[in-house]
Length: 204
Ligand SMILES: [Fe+2]
Image (cartoon, rainbow, N blue to C red; front, side, top):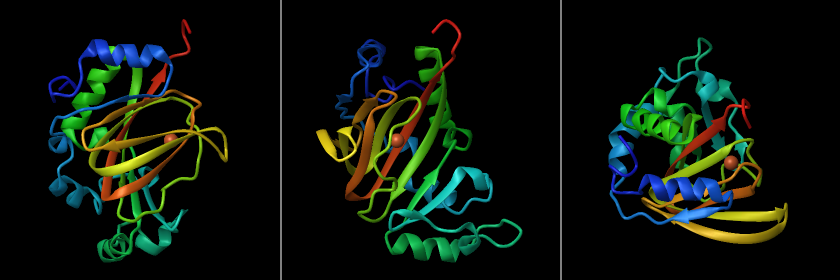
C-alpha cells in the first residue's frame, strides 16, 4: 500500500519534500484511520508480542519503570497499563510495521521510494505532556497524524523557537535528520506514526 493509495500524496510530492532537506508539512485529507484503527491499538497496547525493548510507557515526561507494568517473567499487566493511560500516560510502540500489515506495506513503499531502511513507530498520547523533551533524531522522519492533533515545535537551538506546525489527522510532516523538535499533543487522544528513514552510508 502506498500513501497515494490512501489518498494522501503522490510519489513526486514526497520525493520533492525529501529532497528539500527542509521541514515540510504536507496537508492530507484522506481517512488514514484504516492504517491503525482503534481496535488494533486496543489489542497492541497490552500485547506481549511486542518486544520489551520496543515498548515504552511514559508518564509526566519520564519513563515508567518496567517492573511497574510487567510481571517478573516479562508479561504485561493490562490493568496497570490501562490505569496509567487513563491518567494521561503515553505509549510508544516501536517497530509497529512488524505487527500491523498495512503499516508494513507503507514502510515497504517508502523504502522503495527513498532507498532507505524504514522503521515505523507509533506514538500514542492520552495526556497533554510531550513524550520526549526537545531533541533531534539521527535519521529523517516522515510523521503521519492518525487521530487527534499535535503541535510540532522546531528550535534553532534548544529554547529558541524557530517555527511551529499543527499536525491534524491525515497530515504528513517531513522532518530532516538533525532538526531539533518537540511534538506537543493538543487534541486527545493523539496518535501519530513516525516512519524513520535510515539511508545506507554507501555512496552518500
Ligand atoms: Fe523525534
